[in-house]
Image (tube, rainbow, N blue to C red):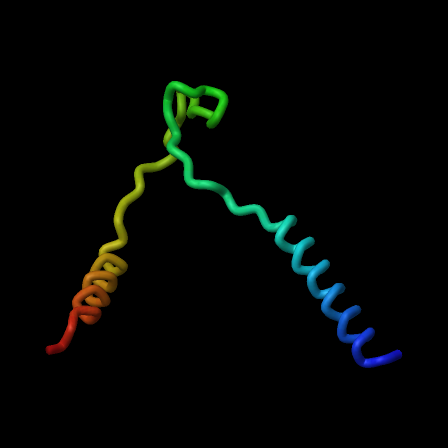
Length: 75
C-alpha cells in the first residue's frame, strides 16, 4: 500500500471517529427553572419529612477560614 493511500485512509478514519464522538457528546444547555412549568422538574411533596437538622462542624469551618486567609496575597 502506498503512503498516500495509507495517509488518506488514516485521515478518513480519524475524521469518522471525531464526528462520532462529537455526535455522542451531549452537554446540557443553561436553563432557567420556573415554578410555572410543572412538567420540567419534579417538585417536592408538601409533606416532606426532614430526618435531622444539620449542624455545622466547627473544626471544618475553622479549617475553611484558615484556608481562605492563606489564599490572600502576602504582599
